Image (cartoon, rainbow, N blue to C red):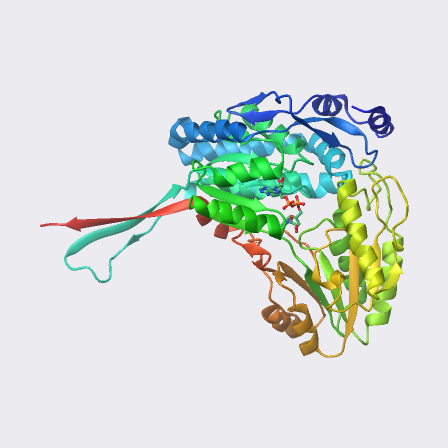
Length: 504
Ligand code: NAD
């Protein structure tokens, strides 16, 4: 661990056990054990100090093969035969152990992602616990149907049986490493599947810790495996592996398309949760206090690294100026600092590469004629702590990159509209369809707009609400399939139809 990170840890009193967990080379977790990294390693960089935290295993297709074999073996072992209520108990034990380690995991996420430790404590970790708790309850309710056949002659008994789909590959991004893993893992475990997880090579720590916890609370070896390394190697090997039955991927749209194509070669079941460019409509009947507060959180929380970020605001002409002023003041007042600072809301982006990518979008907005309201000038602030200030542009149009492309950083675009028809048409003009938000105090208006907007998730007078009982997923370039909610269960289950011809 670099010296600069030691001082950073001292300043924010990072617990010794957290420091010890990260200050070692991170391997893979396969068949119930952490196995050492081979000689190939990736430098894990801490986003605030930009120092080297530790080395991470840069795995190979052979590591993937070992993990898939362990997961297949576990399907045939005690896990596969375990009564549902016992499976439920194990998942609940994992939830309890995770909750007990909330502070530990919050530190891992703040160190790995650079995110606000306060958000990690109150959103990421409780969110993951809630997912495990919710899906634990489903283990005993995965029933098929007994149904009377409607067109068969004679006496028959026809029924369906739900079976675990098998080995599930879970590929997740870096913005909510633990929480998004839990969106997939909880339901997959509830359905009796086994898992090979590939965390982002930028943020592997919480997945590794969770795998250790699972073994500690009694999960059989091989049920939860983690393989670390680059996406092009590990992600592709998982997508191509014939021993994987289902691929559940969350990440960017181009990578989702690539892994999806590979997965189809071996006929895997597929869930793709991809990017977004989510619109926000503020009507002339909006409460601007509510709207400004929620819009700021919907774009600047997690420093804008949100898949459902409300990044395109359409404000009615009668409220536009006041709203923009409120957003400007609110954005300027957001406290800026390192992830471990519990008071910081805007924290470093996950990596220098990503910061440069976001800055490139900011430069494009300047160059294309959007008007800066607050935030980063052309070429940025010159800081060396990974932070980009919350940035708002006004007078954006759909032909600008800021309104077309996912930025995945603290950058908000605003435009003005005259009629609701115009707002809906412009909001729906994106290739993405992950989320949309509406701000209005008029109930009918909100319901009608919710019907007309093309997105998988609609927020009314709020942004970014997530609940384990509600399905989350997008349309169009935002992918297909759902995480969470009962709708997710069938993606981890096969339905078998049994026909019995009865004779007298
Ligand atoms: P990414 O697509 O670069 O990577 C996602 C995962 O895929 C990582 O684990 C990565 O290592 C792996 N990967 C990368 N290249 C690969 C390849 N060629 N083959 C197989 N796997 C590969 O995305 P990211 O930068 O980690 O995350 C940001 C993106 O994720 C954004 O587009 C964001 O909108 C999206 N996201 C979507 C949701 C959702 O639920 N819809 C949630 C969070 C993030």
